[in-house]
Each structure stands twice: as C-alpha cells, then as structure tokens.
Image (cartoon, one colour):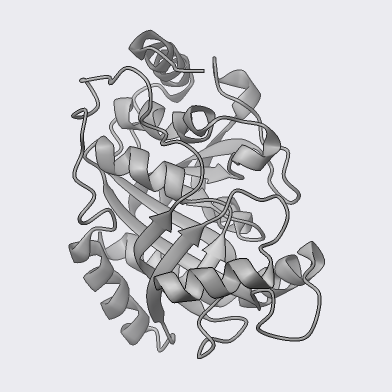
Length: 274
C-alpha cells in the first residue's frame, strides 16, 4: 500500500493527542534483543502500535510493538520497542511508515540498531559495528509510488545516508567508554530465512561486513525526509558458512542479551552528545 500524506498526518495527530506538548527530537528503532533500552526512558509515555492509525503491528520474537516517549540521556526521544519487517508480510511502506510519522512530530534524527550476522571474517560474535553504508539489492524501495514532496524530493541523494558527523560522535563516544567499535557496510536481505553460505560469499564479494533483515528501509526513508541517521549493528553470530554450525534465533537473542549493557551504554552515550 502507498500511503498518502493524509494518513501520516492522521497518525501524527493521534500521537499529539496523547503526548500533549511533548515533541521527540530523536527516534530510536531498536533491534532484536535490544528493546530493553526503552525501559530506561524517564517519564515514559507508552503507546502500542495498534493505537496509531494506519500503523502495522510487530510480530517478531522479543519485539514488544510499542512506542516509548520520554527523556533518555538528556534527549527527548521516541523509542520503538520492536520494529516492523517485510518478512512479517508488511510492505516497505509499512515498515518505514513510523519514520515519516515521527518526522511530522518533529524528529530530526534516527538512531537505529539491529542484530545481524558477521560476514567479515575478521569480526567476532559480540562485536558492535558502526554502519558506514548499506547495500540493498532485494525488493522495491520504500520510496516507490507517488512522491510526497512534503517529505523529500523524487530522487533523493544517498551518498551519505549514515550522517558523517554522527559517525564521528559514535567514534568519540566509543573511545570515551573504552568500547571496541568496528566499522562496516550492512547488507539487507529480506528473510525470514537466514542467508545461505553462497549468499554470504556474495555479500562479502560486494563489500558487506554484516548481513541482516532490517534497518535499510527505515534509513532510506529517514534520509529522504532530511533526517540525520546513525546506525549500529550488533554482530550476534557469524553468518552462514563462516563457521561450521547452524544458525538459530536463540543464538541471536543470547548474544544480544550478553552485549546489552555495553551496547546500551554506547547508544546512551551517543544520545548525550547529539
């Protein structure tokens, strides 16, 4: 479904009626196993996705499917505890819908995280990767259909989807917290099946360092809206074929839980510097 501007405006109006005068500056979209950061929000206002007109609900494991509005590390934020994925049956427009709604509410930046498989053989499970760029070869764009000029141009530039100035913030924050930070390219695969070893070799050949099933639709939409974007990948496992062992969602969630405190500290530290 292609949503007209009126749909986004209706969703924004519904949220304003709940939020009163609160206006989030930063939208956080948290990936698998990382949603607990929303529990740290001060003076939280919780809004289930089902209460937002036109918005789809999250069905992925460990995704609560709700917004948490409030203060985090000195910033007015909207935290998505659980995201939408195309493998749930949603379109790219469905997946990226909340980004545009939050833009109408005043959000200036998107901080997005995901759990993914490491393709770069120099990486290890548990590494945090700063996303410098992405590769998307599968599916249509979230910008397909009639362009909504109120959000951005018909043919937006994607030279710097992940804002260089915010990547510098991430580097300084990681250094100050003594957190090791990898940097690399994230490649989008639609899922829900994990990538095959041949697909992982293809990703490595194309220059990807990690592969996953999210983030890119939201990042493209945010860049189109003129938002700054900062993205992190938690490498919860080595991608298929790197190690001689099968992949499982339990492995992903366990690795995310183990790295949760370190990862949360990095995200909160970056927020404090924005």
